Length: 176
Image 1 (cartoon, rainbow, N blue to C red):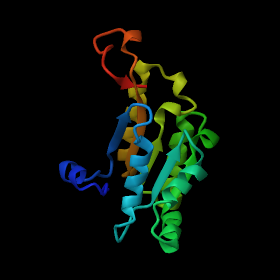
Image 2 (image 1 turned 180 degrees about the horizontal axis):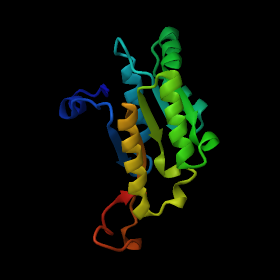
Image 3 (image 1 turned 120 degrees about the horizontal axis):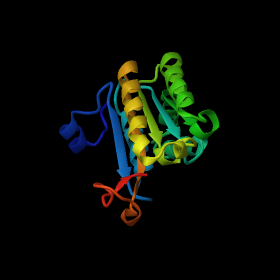
Image 4 (image 1 turned 180 degrees about the vertical axis):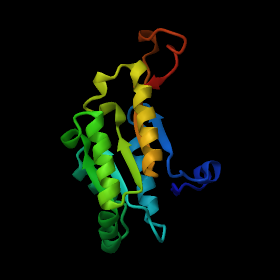
């Protein structure tokens, strides 16, 4: 998957099938907008991959409207609607297994090749996973990306409260 950002594409060679990419940053730094821009940049390709944008923070309709604002004309807007699927995670995925099933369904039924999971930190079931169990979620997503041969991009907020954490890595920013 080409990101459309030449320097990033040159450094990474693009994101490959089976890759799990995590975009991490503090509050209000533009993680979601960056991910939507990558989806938009796919439209410049002759054969753009079908992409699912799964959001836990905003509604699927709001995310789609944001993407459509990037469209140059009506034709491009219609193409964006046809080549991208928007999913409200909160409405359909009460746990990780439901999220996994939804991704499998999108890949099999709609031929999705890339999945963006926006605002991982707002997933409805994330409270069930303490910080030490969250890497397990990432590992499971990585295995899913490999199994399905797709690219999964996750956006997540960094926790900037080091004084509340213990341990060797307690004073470094961590995934929320």
